[in-house]
Length: 104
Image (tube, rainbow, N blue to C red):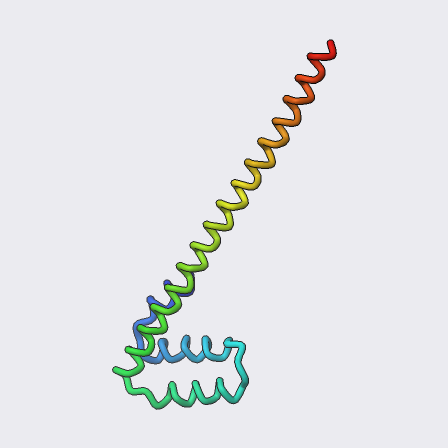
């Protein structure tokens, strides 16, 4: 949870504003909407910014946890598929060997 850890480490108000600005600028949204978000960010007082920042940090944490869970599920599915393929291959080899023995 790289992004979450980074956001959690920010303690100074200016650092929190800076990383929030960077995050807003990297969003794939229209430029005029980015501008509105950045302007709104500047109107927040320290308490409001802390509240917003904490919510943003928790949101990032939840997204990263979901992504990690999705990766885990995907890896499990891939492993199960690979095991099934390997079992099918071994079955074919055993059948071929059995056929060979029956023909001898």
